[in-house]
Image 1 (spheres, rainbow, N blue to C red):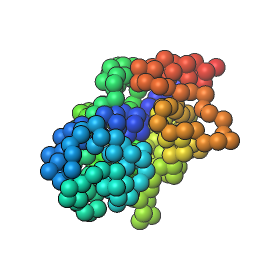
Image 2 (image 1 turned 180 degrees about the vertical axis):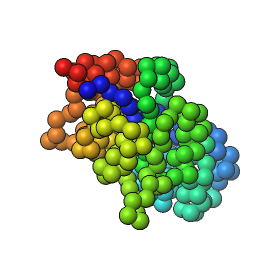
Image 3 (image 1 turned 90 degrees about the vertical axis):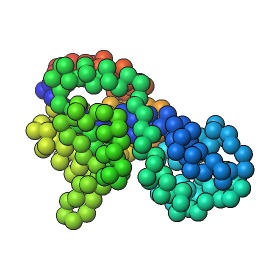
Length: 236
């Protein structure tokens, strides 16, 4: 059965998280906290932010504690101040992955329905989508913070968020492919929900003891040829 829909993760898949943090370090963070630092070194600030971020899987307060400890301050801000700044300013530095728009154009030209499923706060993640100017390409955008089932937010890898996306797109699980970087939430989650999956390698290690997925990409310009390979193999 051919594919009809391609669904993406957002951070470290469509959005270049490292490039976004570099922009955040050199602009909003430096403007707000530069006078509080003992020395100003944009590269050092960027490296401290990357270390504190830990791939995006810590709470804002945990990130802020790590960041405050990683830099030398003349007058250190509070954890709350750093957390609020990240929540309010980081998403404004959203930077696209190289090759994003040629890939999206090619997929739309070939008739695929497109969507995003991303974990995170509803306002912040939607702001990233809009700042990247990719909403016009998308038939759906589901942010876990805004998906409420049985009174509770639903996050990847819960199959229900994948099934909700399929319902909104009007396709079956075997007609859809999910592309993301995080093994448990993206690839294992999508596969358990019945979708095909392509792993965006380079950001998170694959869990020990599990075979790596057959379909992988390093860059977005590899999406099209890998999708064509997948189409050929599932059409046999």
